[in-house]
Image (tube, rainbow, N blue to C red; front, side, top):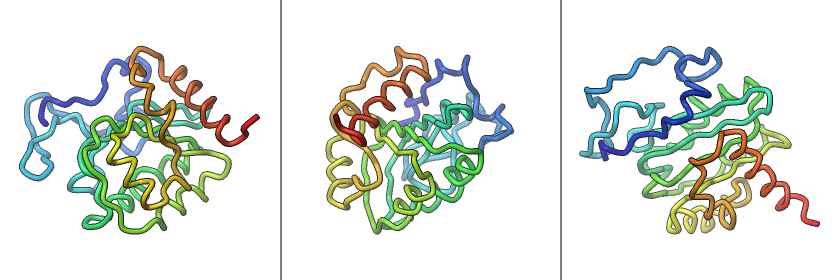
Length: 191
């Protein structure tokens, strides 16, 4: 797992540790020392710790004018044992929503498992973003099935176009947002 890096080609557009509004402002990263691990596997030092022992993330883009962020995930999302959604909600999402962010794109290609417990934090998150939304991009089938089994599709958009957008890296962050916003709008307001 130490070879899985967060997507870095958008750093010409945005760097979370340089953003004074980011929950990760001021962080310093090593290119050589691996300090975090998931279970017994070291992970690349560019991933951000936010309180969870099994789930790490990278805020790869934030646009405060258009009120959206793109977050890449790594590891195991485990609400059952570690209440990861609480850490995500309290230590990352709330800081971003205080800055006006209400649209969240979560990239789940490197999210290997999901274990649910309850949906109260997801419900709270969805209620707090008002007319915003949460979209799960390229999540693995078994993870989406767990989301569906726990009725998280009431709060998070996933499936369909969001599973087939595997070439997102070839777009600019704003183009990714526009494509996903168009898809979500079609689901919210079908013609």
